[in-house]
Amino acid sequence: MTRIPLALALTLSLAGPLSAPAAAQEAQSVRLGFFPNLTHAPALVGLERGTFQKALGKVKLEPKEFVSGTTLTEAFAAGQIDIAYIGPGPAINAIGRGMPVQIIAGASEAGAVLVARKDSAIRTYKDLAGKTVAVPSLGNTQDISLRHILNESGLKPKTDGGTVTITPVAPADVLAAFAAKRVEATLVPEPWGAVLEAQGHRIIGTEKTVWRDGKYPTTVVIVNARFAQANPALVTAFLKAHTDAVAFINKSPAAAQAAVNKQLLALTGARIDPRVLQRAFARTRFTTALDPAALKEYAALNVEAGYARSAPDLTPFLRK
Amino acid sequence: MTTFDHAGPARPARGPSRWVALGWQLLGLLLILAVWWLLTDVLKLYPPYVFPGPKAVWTEISYGLWGSGPQDGKLLSAIGGSLRRMLTGYLIAVALGVLVGLLMGAWRPLRTTLGAYLTGIQSVPSIAFVPFAILFFGLNERAALAVVILEGFIPMALAVSGALLNVPPALRVAGRTLGAGSLSLTLRVLLPASLPNILTGLRTAWSFAWRALVGGELLIGGVASLGEQLEVGRNTANVALVLATIIIIGLIGGLFDALLRAFEGRVRRDYGLEVPQ
Image (cartoon, rainbow over all chains, first blue to last red; front, side):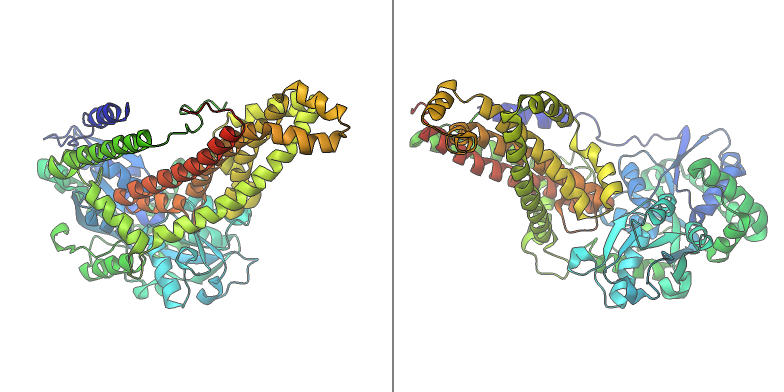
């Protein structure tokens, strides 16, 4: 019977690494997570204009790109990310699992649309019955919104015994998925909604009909609580740069759009028509404000979607 | 290719030795649980979002299997979906495998060409076929099913053709002498004679197909499946759900393997291939 010693050896050998992600005081670098979406424009603009690096001074900024909040959360859990732009869905999940997360600012609101393929018969939310709908990833902010929309329209996802197939597709890949007719609709963050619209696909849910008349957070800024404790000055500096980036977007939209486009091209290889980007911008609001009520409702939707059994009390995790 | 079977066919363990083995296995399980509990819940060596303790995983299993809340019971429907997909794919794979295996066993040129390719394809991890299957069939169950069939069919075909080749020539000659034609020889002499080896193929095909299924479901998503539960757990930072799903995948895989193994052992005993203890 080799089972016992082997199992013991395996479990013990696991014990070595992983424990205690390094929370070094006076960090030498700030690892920033974000996605190549318009809803993350403050990150894209701040990177393009060097706003963050300037604010951090000698400390090196290490930007890391992710496709969705859920993969970012994994990196966060593994202690590989210090500060991140992320959707409220994954942020709330991370908090619910006891990760050391602090939500320190808002970044964008609205900016997600439901688009149906032009050759599909989908005209309203109810027409989604029996169709395949793409979201950036299962459990992310758009997925939670979609499940809420379905619920409101009397529909159910297939996994809950309904007819709607919800399938994860990275936003930048949705164009290809539409072209290949792999999915019939998608709830995507901008600018991908506007890009699809420019290709003749139909917007059936605007940012305002998705939820709360558009007054919902799409992206927030979170920080690893241990990092924040060890490096309060760095977090403050970052927050100031973030505020500057948001102010710049609202003050000089044209320049901000150019900056976003440059970053998107570099990160996703997609060159977006400035007019399309402008339309996407018009559907997104950029603000550093955090609406605790909206976040609380989001936590409830997360429960409704089946991703958590209870909504965590977010108050201790919000930092003004 | 099929060297993963370290344990060999079931030993006809009877009487006290079987209970002793079971006792050791139970003890091993308890020890694993104890060490796990000690590392996580007691010593708290890992944060729960990296490596949750047995209690958290048990919570996921109990809610997922027999919880009665509006969102509970998802593991149960995932098991149902995966098993249904698996059985469909497995039956098709076995039927196809027997057919192609017979043809390969009967006809040497097919054996030397197709047989060699199948051995090569078998060395490709099943997950590598998933992107192609998705492009071909779309993001749906059929893509997962296609990979299951492919992965189950190959070991089955190879086992059947190999089994036919291992039939003692004397049986073949005897059959011919007694006046059997090709079909009758195959059906009444060769197939029965190679049954023990074919059963090994059935078991190999099962484990290949089961692993392929979970891999395929993981990438496809959108339907109730164990693969999707893994993905949901991963995406919602619910490591306890991931571990719970892994345990269930292992349990189901092991259970079916044991069933097929028992059946195989019985047949081997009937064929006089096992020396009674």
